Amino acid sequence: MDIVSIIKRLLIKYRDIVLYGVFGVLTTLVNIVSYWFMAHPLSMGTMISTVLAWVLSVLFAYFTNRKWVFRSKATGYDAIVKEIVSFFACRIATGVVDWACMFVFVELLRFDDVVIKVLANIVVIVLNYVGSRLFVFRQK
Picture 1 (tube, rainbow, N blue to C red):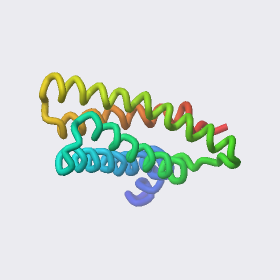
Picture 2 (picture 1 turned 30 degrees about the vertical axis):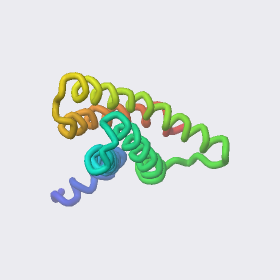
Picture 3 (picture 1 turned 90 degrees about the horizontal axis):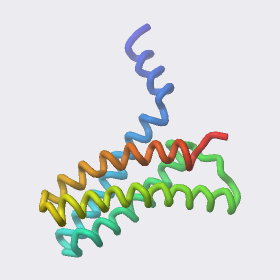
Picture 4 (picture 1 turned 45 degrees about the horizontal axis):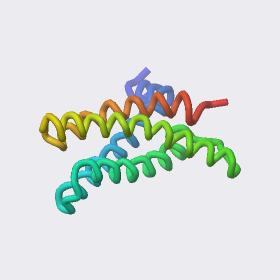
């Protein structure tokens, strides 16, 4: 078996994780860039910038996760609303983790805000995958 076949087989086997990684990186970029833009050029402050960046990144994550990562089959108003509510509830929980990291390490301990934002997002990405897999986009 050649290396190309091995790579193809691994990509097929771990498709969800690979796509989640790709869209997780893109979601993290949306979060960090929008945070930086609001906190620095717009001078909106750490906490409001964190919340607004979170909203933008969660919207981006929902649509990409629904379509490409977990290939949601939910149809109809009730099923889609349930999925969106579950997704946002899961993200609120991890948003609290992000917010707490920013508050403790930036506001209280005065660490570099962008470094802490990146580190907090690594933790959040892992928690979001687990939550999405177990609670939001469960395969029936």
